[in-house]
Amino acid sequence: MIQQENYFIKHNDFILWRLTGDSELEAYWNGFIKEHPEMKASFDNAIAMFKGIKLNDNRLTEDELASILPFEKKKTNTIRMSVIRYAAAACIAIAIAAGVSVYYFNTHTEQSEMLTASTITGENLEAEDIMLITGDETNSFSNDVKVKIDGSGKATVSEADADESKVVETGNTKMNTLIAPYGKRAQIELSDGTKVWLNSGSALEFPSAFTGKTRTVSLSGEMYIEVAPDSKKPFIVNANGLNVEVKGTKFNISVYKEAETQSVVLAEGSVSVKNATFGEKTLKPNDMLTCDRNGWDTKQVDVNEYMSWKNGYIILKSTPMEEVLKRIGRYYNLSFNINDSAKLASKTCTGKIVLSENLDDVMNTVAMLASAKYIHNGNVIHLIY
Image (cartoon, rainbow, N blue to C red; front, top):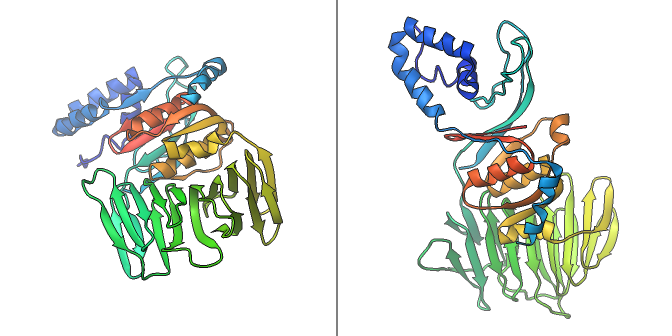
């Protein structure tokens, strides 16, 4: 006897029929239900589920994409990529990701002619909390936080959507750590008045007070920082092999361990960047330094492209699709496992993406900018390109 549970929603031909409306597949499934009337309830439930699918079919020309540019001045999730290949055969061979698949079907071709399409498929899992670690004490917060360290070493923590702030004692510890997991962000004002915006998937180690000859912190991940001026006490950021020294400036630094390239983008002032292998470079405003295993380089950039995330949006200018997905993945706690794909490598995005709380809005924008299709079905999302 056929197992009814999940039979239809995991069946290749059923999904293909519901997404394309193919008449031959419709005839097949109507006949199937006549032969298996005991499965009628499961069959109807599966059809109802697919009626909830959201589909974005927007495709933009280069001129339309260019028209977006003026407006620029305006838990844990696992996602796997599957390449779905259609071949002329007695049955359709399809690679399934995460137990659910998305299909393209060209109803204007002969039955023996199939398209090749690619899809990124993801499933939502549980989120993690922000953590403030002070000595032997760990404080957890489920929402984004703002932290302020006063002169006595006390940390006042304001959590989004919370009615009251929480005071945490840090005065008896030498170093503290603020961790923002994927999907969360944190802000902190250090004891000297320096302000830090900590991006998703990042950790900042900092002292309760800067008592030595330098003000030194350590970073993993990404932050935007506005360093309080102090000509007598340089501010130093140790970050995954990079040593950034400043006295008063604004810059963004990205040193995710899983990334092949690290970067420092300077908005104001001057910074000195040191590396044990490549030496030392001094940056001026609008300079971007990139560093990988082969060396480092500097160029002039629009700093807003690299700092706008702290204001709740990202600006894209012919940005590779793979890089866009990585940034969206960190922000919304989506972990992409992207296989090599020449088709994906050729995709770029130009425009502005508002990082709203609604993932559908964000992914629909990504799909529009990349001339792709977006489908959201329950806990599963699909981006077809």
